[in-house]
Length: 183
Image (cartoon, one colour):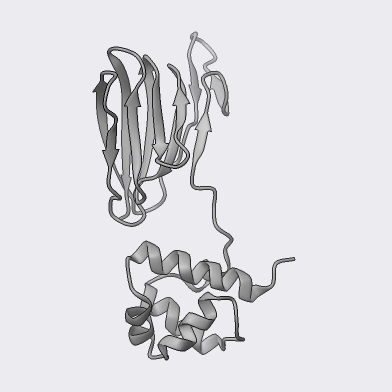
């Protein structure tokens, strides 16, 4: 079992970075010493519930989020995989690729790309998630350090708040991009 301070330290770092705040700013907002926050983020110390509550208020997150392990942030679903349901009276199948978290906003784009230079995107707003479905051609897509080659019908989601790429590998590559923005 993971010790609570380990989960708390991971949660503090994750949520502070997601909020785009410095160590000093979070400490100031929570009314604690910067050194105390630094120790907690390093996995040292035994914070009181009052300190943790103050940090949650400073980060504008629910208390339980500090105790949650990091969720899987990248997902790839190949064509023909994923949870699917069939229609009773038609040759029709729906495969669930992603759900939308409460309070989020989604914008939908059709991407057209040619081989050559790749599209390098800087990090978007903290908490942004990109969903891509290749419909024609092939592309290398995802975080710069772990991009994945996708074929027609393949799906990927990844954090849009880190540097990421889209590189067409075939002429006239088409993809649908859903940009999920925090509420």
